[in-house]
Image (cartoon, rainbow, N blue to C red; front, side, top):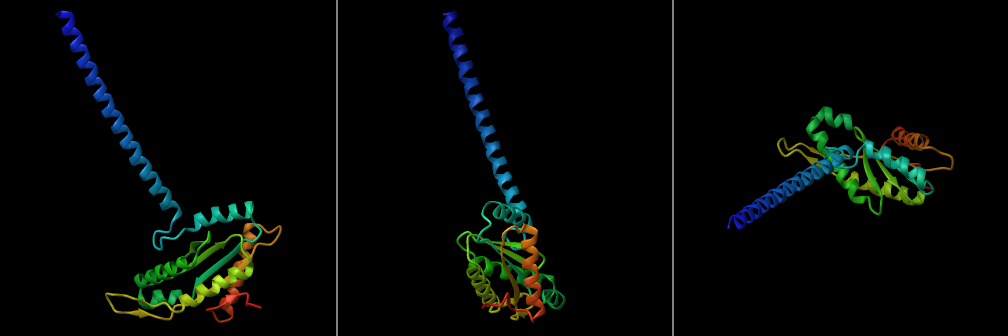
Length: 208
């Protein structure tokens, strides 16, 4: 009888230990899942712009380097600058200026398909990487976005202030042999500057 009691007691202890171990495993797995979720959120925060929810400059730097290193032929870059953005901020306040940025980003993002990515390049500037494409196609994309932006209007619900004169200037360049990333960005930025200099609300170079 004593032996049986000891066996029962040991069996009960083993079951209790097994249950405890299972609970510890479940708890550990739950903590791992929580950490994975937090890590994924942290990685997203590092790559996305908090205001516009599009990819940020850090993501752009990584992606453009990878694109030019692996498949440069047919890579086009579009730089976009919202015209007179400082006036929006000075005249209507930063809150409405932020709304302009978000609205432009949303409309531009809607036009980016088939592996084309939009980035907030900095301030009121955005960048688009167009891989595996012809320059003509990239320029047509930029022109389509330009036309869409000039039709936009934003309204501050609290003050009823409306901005319906939103336009943007564009520079479009195609990667050339032996060109590095910095040179591609510089070439595109020069075309963007030309668009500003010639009156804004246009895509440079001019279509043939």
